[in-house]
Image (cartoon, rainbow, N blue to C red; front, side, top):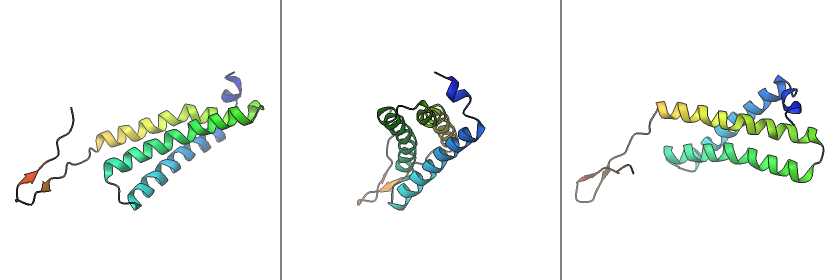
Length: 115
């Protein structure tokens, strides 16, 4: 039933959007603190942002019968892919620079991007 989601109000929607951006930022920062490269940071960010919401929906559906408890995770499932889409669009505009690697013999090795 879509009615509870539609009447949830802008405050709930804003809170959910903020939650996803904050989770993304924390995922990115924790990946950076552990020494991950830029590609790994972006991957962790997307995974953290997506998986948290799916887990919340599963928990709400499994443990609560009250539809009001299931509304926030359902709203999050609407906004989650949009937040990840925004991040993907921003990162597409800022591609990751390929690093050259110096071999022991002195030749430069450039990693190849898979097709």
